[in-house]
Image (tube, rainbow, N blue to C red; front, side):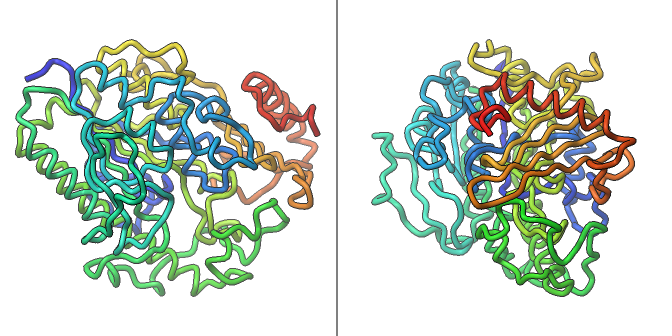
Length: 450
């Protein structure tokens, strides 16, 4: 058996942290992810860093693959140039590429919402890869490994399975070929539970809409223009949001999650049967979350908890079982974390911080603050107790205002304290930190440019 651990990297699309049983939701059924939490370490204050694209998955995945912060991960930061936002900066060593350079067999299946060149550098094997953002789960456009590295759209074909099965079964076939003689890096990127939320037949009616509880922060309409009230995601339900329609969206969302959870169970079971589990680090995360009626919103184009906080679960050798970490973390911290577990040198271009000290319990925190961005109009800064969201008008859209929440007593972000004199010092502190961070990362939309 190789000394270096195998890597099984599982990433979902649109799966918010709260929609897992072990993360506190009593309605959604996720026995596999619950067991993964029980067998490993889960991070409960993990957030993505956002980005300048309305397709939030593009920049968040760019951060994961490069280990660089949001303004360094992609080729450029021009919101009028989608190609620059979608293309990973080729000056980075990409996560899977690093493992490939160090003797790992690298394999990918599922969604790759960045450029083909970075994919070709990262993976030596591939099957059923979807280059894009969203598609019908029953007719996904995919292609297999391209020795030329071009991955031209002319090679695409329509997959013959539901997306979760299509990608999950590709991962299963890869694992069936592994004999333990060489370490592998398996990247499996599901498109579930992204819309169109159409669970397969065995899960289509598993959740009854009328039985779905509405979240405490459900409301018919967002209280002000956040600059993205007419984005595609927000138009998937009528305004004002109606309880019955929102419950239907939640039921379909949970059906997609439970189906994915079942397929992940198949992957983990095969890992055990093949005798590979003991030497495999399993990572489960998502690119971003989703509102689904919370704060009167439906999509991900906002910086509330339901959209920025995503699950992060790690199981494997030297990872404590049943450990819950409440320290602050960013999803792109996965990059140096996997490097440290595998004994690989972290490239100097990586901005992220290894989570190994938090997993081992040798430190209480690696970050004092988390930051997230959305286009030019929204910026978020939070610590363990307080959270500030700043809104700036961008052209004719949005508004100039702020929201301040005391997360410790108001986890649903219901009570805006931005104008409360008793919380003024907290707002000022977070504003200073936000401005400091924006300057440090060369945010193209700093307060100085307004």
